[in-house]
Length: 218
Image (tube, rainbow, N blue to C red; front, top):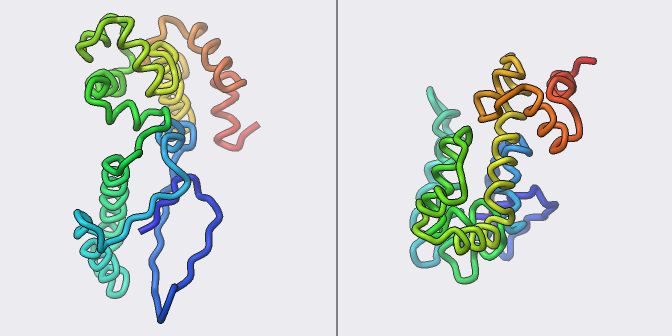
């Protein structure tokens, strides 16, 4: 199995004899998924014959069966199998020697100390988190937490939280008709003006212009 997180150009060929292959793809909102994608190498290769990867040929067999002989629910089944393969691939990669060395969301989330803090931030980004509160969740001192977080996540805690909020906001602005002010308030901004300024600094355009561009309107 080859997982190409960045969509890099590639070529497949059989080393010997006949071969067949299946492919699937994930469509994601780039801004929302950028933290995860930036943490991954261009390609993750897993071989089913390796120890601990017995799930790979089993999953491939199930996926092939759904594709070759589709019936009611086959599309949903194939989609779920691809989701599971993606998660299993990330787990296998993170367990490999040297994996997870690049700063980013995944590297920080896999860290035993930072994991609870990352979970809290992602579950409730609207909360006015302080470094002290997050350090408490990680059972670290403020200084140790800030240094560890910055090294593994690639951003200081406050910057990471701000980018997460704005990423969530950008997705909601592009995919819903919620008022811009309501979206900003739901993500922890005290006023629409403050939200609009922060959004423009991050994305180079005002929230309403972002929505118009994404909806293809003038």
